[in-house]
Length: 95
Image 1 (tube, helix red, strand yellow):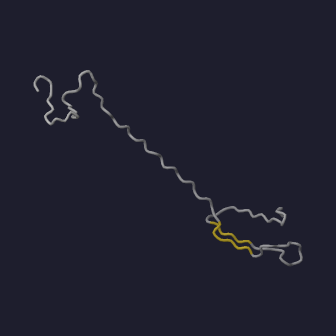
Image 2 (cartoon, rainbow, N blue to C red; image 1 turned 90 degrees about the horizontal axis):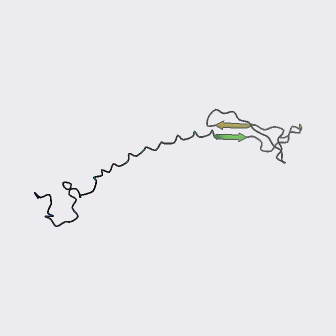
Image 3 (cartoon, rainbow, N blue to C red; image 1 turned 45 degrees about the vertical axis):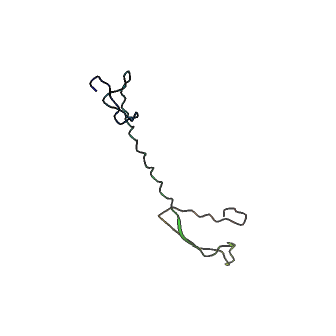
């Protein structure tokens, strides 16, 4: 209307009229924050693993009598590695 008032022609009191702000208030513009991208963690490389292994004698008696004095251990890893094998006795002591 010419006098600065507006008439609610559709009888909807919930209308928000941009042309006539509420007297005594400030207009505020909401600005949504910009999301910060979450960095993708770099996965740790998998450690080498044993692919196959064979042991010719599981029990050895290296006493020099020629019976079960030796064994052969063959290992295949997923990649080149430096490996160390410990031989232990029945009391779990290293030879």
